[in-house]
Image (cartoon, rainbow over all chains, first blue to last red; front, side):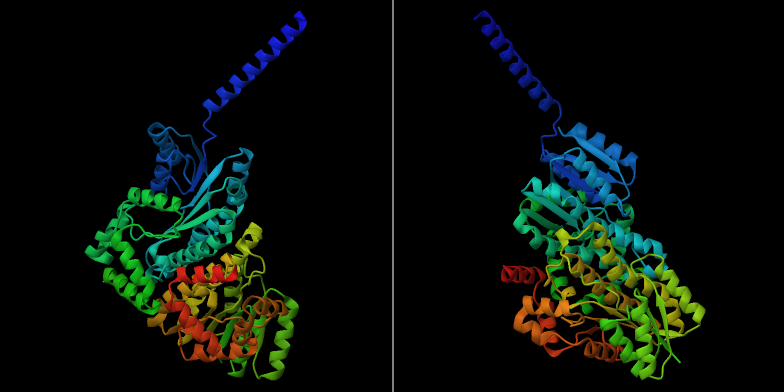
Length: 293
Length: 257
């Protein structure tokens, strides 16, 4: 009898200890919270989006080329919000990047719920003066990386449904801009990709959205450029990256397909989409020439 | 005598474009992946038409191909004044099931090679002006009618690129056109797929590659921007361009279900 009581007591103790240990573990790491991956999340719109996600209590995985900017952003976000930020310094234009990122996430059993493809390069002005390699770089960064990441991370997103994919295109994706030839071509590809993907993944409960902002003041050059080409209209239409990120995330969670931040941008994007493309091209072309004169 | 370069000119629409050019007495530079198909195309064309045909076997999805083609043209010393970017893969597989490397191959053949070849040959086309560039898009590039994400998005990028390029190259007397065919019966698998997915409409809209090539070259030499072969396909292209994209995607999807 005594033996039985002792053994029951020991068993009970073991169970209690184990439960406590488990609870401790859960408290220590907040990996139980869902994760959001932001490709190109160290600066500009990407950072705006990352912050909007942090505000909503998502843990973050930020991917960008430079480790020092990533480290800086990580510290900033972790002190401001009660979240966990992982960083990965990877050039997304490489073929292998998508595999590396997907493997990294699967190995750590990341509870991935949101994927934001923000990385992109917007070379302004004259594509004929660009070397061929930088044109290819633009294609692979703007569209190929977006497709590859969506594809490789799909199994993880499927596991944690309802989940979200946010692709970042541009208003340039609605109609071709001659002076930003390759940029607007790749962005139009992103828009079309998002359309199709949304319907392909609807049954899997993954919502796909596409952010198409007008001018966003992420760099001082862009401010100057917008002022010169689009005048007061451009200045009125432009937004800062923080507002764009916040708006984008709000609408992504509402499962909106095409997201255009800003009232003026919304109106002009509807007009652009309605007008024949040829008109828009020559309109854009004339606006582009204004600057070079 | 002037030369025309047809990338992807050994089979299907590419071959018929080559034939339409041969009929107009253009000498031909054919580039494709499959050596045997190229030799066959060369023999057929040289037998029927009084033209010279040169061939180069290379895979357009590879980065180095562009430079290779450019050097090859220079070595031959031919005056190229027509460039046709026809190479493309239709993608039998759909997005979620496609392996990643195939996605990038598709993007590279459909989009990147078009951009790269046009860019590298522009100086040569400029010196031989008036010249012509023909890019091959698709009806699916106007609006998201195909729920084939990689193919449709690459084609829409080709459209956007062609519009911009036409504007940019206007002062240089280089005319850029974009061929946007509906279904073209180049392979038996396409015939089956079209019949299954579009039924009556597909049957009436579909064209033979020979006709598409002829109409494409006629449009190209008349400097038309968008070339949609076939009356029904043209009508549909107008509707697609007028209606909002999002609405079309929604319609197509609910129809499929």
